[in-house]
Image (tube, rainbow over all chains, first blue to last red; front, top):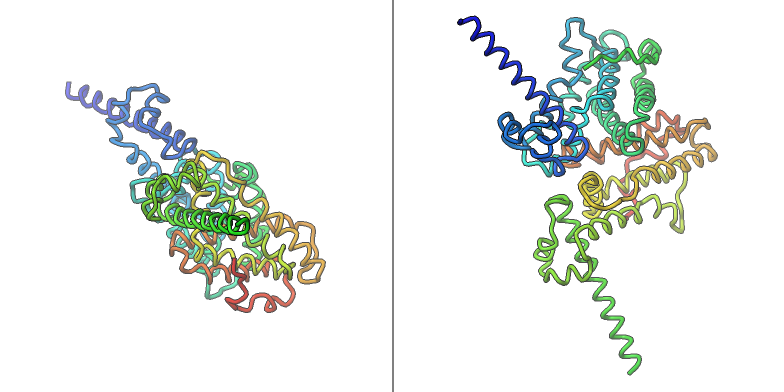
Length: 220
Length: 220
């Protein structure tokens, strides 16, 4: 009897988690398509085929959905994943893999697209989002220091500046690609960007890292 | 009598133009500070110390103000000015001067800041804005071709690709600078960016163009 109650409780928790995730995914589609102002709890409920009350049981207000999507995108930011994984990449391999993975996520992961749009619209959303770019710049700077230690690039003093520009460049590339081709040309623009950054970094043996291979990307 | 009527008509036209410009400037301040959704005709009238009716006499709706500000920013885009001016710059001098001028306008010209914010919020505004980036990429590509013809950079085939990346890079630099320092570090980031781009372009005698001199910027 106790076992059965426990089992049933855990089934119900699992079902609740599943519903919550489904609502988040549908909210992400709405935010990505319509932006913050165009999205409503009612519209999310309708698209999910559930009652408004069920959505509000999990998320009291639209802003809570937006916050969770943005925070989730930060938590799963591929740098954290790659660097925290059992077989961590480091140096240039970490940078290249992460940038390709994030670029792929922009195209394939609606939650990442939603988070990007919400961050762009941040000044019309009544919530405090994490400051973008800062942690990326720090992680890339560390990767560049490792790359210099490992003899992948020449040592130099201003690697933090290079990291700042690499992040700014990546942001600009994805933005222009999005506005002009709905990110259709993003993969090739990213490869062009990596080649340009590698020249600036003075990478020894760049072909080790730049050989085009979509499998280099890590699934988020 | 006829002369006096004509004079009075032209005075009244001048006054009307002045009022219109003043409303546009105040609308730009509102859009830059509060974004599209946070701005209202009533708020603009209040800030201008005029009646709502006078604002609406010049601009029927908020969207008309937004459109005029964005189109105005395009029309005065410094490339057009510099290239169309009596003593036109060309090649690398045109690129460097334009980029510094636009970067300065981001900091000093509230209409440019408003236009940038409105373009960022474009998907919540019921108007069709000009597609950004396209004309800039074309103009920069032409400047690069001229630069190669004039022996400022080596000739190569993919100058249009370089122009695309220069524009994307500029956009990313101003965005990250804006988000992290409210554009306080923009001038130095722009100089760093120009140095990086010059290495990639293989500019001969880069010091001819890169010597730090704020007077290089052309007033918009």
